[in-house]
Image (cartoon, rainbow, N blue to C red):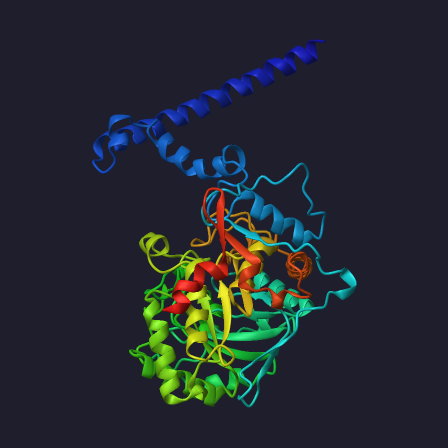
Length: 498
């Protein structure tokens, strides 16, 4: 008994000493913070409320996470709400994606998409797989593309090594293509034996010479890979139309610097446009040159700004001859983007794909180029309904980037522009990358593709067609005012007449 009392007395003494040390250490620290706060002149809150004023900035930082998990309704968040993310998570895990008791989706706001079901839907035994589409049939190596849903451009550098590995393997298993993004072609892109679309950005990473011009030898070498099926020239992207890509110095590792052909540990900022391309004629010349060197189908990616520019492009193509046309046009949305971008551009510049896709398709139809030029839609199209809308409007293919990020485990932590992604998708911190197992996530990528394709097929069959590529504008309606809607065909008719 005496031993226990002695032990407790000794333990209590130690605790008392520890408490005094902690408090004694905290007081000088708080005093220093207090003096720094009341003497600085940059922040009024800290000056007027020293020490406790720091709570304001901490709570402001926590606010976006608290809203995401506790306060925002299922369909309130931006850029993707909880229902959208949960659908992708369930699809990637291949678990039950049915919901009970009716939809929580409000069908009244203008812009809401619905589909026109027929009285006699397609029977399952009559349904067929989506037919393949040939891109660049006049090229030496045309591409027969089988999947209408594919992995959009995400650069190695913007996303991590295990993320690229998982996407490559998953795309290979799913039979869809993987776009490299503007960061060059790495060995990790080729791991999964998937079809590759090699993207050339304004900095020409991977195919640039020392002075930043296009190196034909490097381009021919990359295009020589059997997996590289097409070349995409990126004029602009959804996150930052009119501004080049930005990769912070923290993400420019030795390997990424080697793949891109740039200095290590320095901010990598692409020019805001190709120096060689200042007009439509120069654009068509550049497309022709890249196609001649690569011998592969070559197209462009852009965010549409001036609708009349598309008409001018088509007019120039008709004057030169249809062989001068890009083999495909990827229409990116102004609200796209997975990396760092100025808010002034990501919020205010460019046309959303909801408007620009029909503009591009209609212009191609008016000029008789629709069969010559394939159309790819990109930008926040991550669920079957959005993909089906794009096919109805006239897209041949749909690309998704952030949908596949969710399939990899992204939790929308909004850390893409830093090196602190908690799920390992967009960080080069080895400790954080450990959480992303490429083998496991590759299966989720495949299952996400499979489930999107399957459910777009379900929508198509409900509309009475045998496969998704037969969806047309009359199959989709868009709410114009509460209680009223029009088909996409009716809404696009004025632009088609003009």
